[in-house]
Length: 105
Image (cartoon, rainbow, N blue to C red; front, side):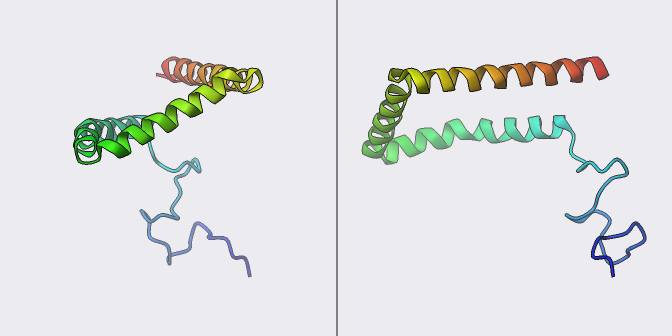
């Protein structure tokens, strides 16, 4: 017996987590992600300010740890080269996705 769900399987909910669209996509649109990310970012600043006021010493500790990590990465030629290469690759992929999205609409 085949364990995969067939198109006539009625035990799956049509809008459930295992449902698929005709083009085998997950049904999310890029704009949905952008809207959710913006909504999360809007509330982040207020929560961050409250956390800083409640935990000033922890904030200083986190800032020192981040600074030390950035210092280690930027002081090493190998890590700096790896960081630059990965940032460049990410920028290229984001640019390509932006161009594809603009050309398709």
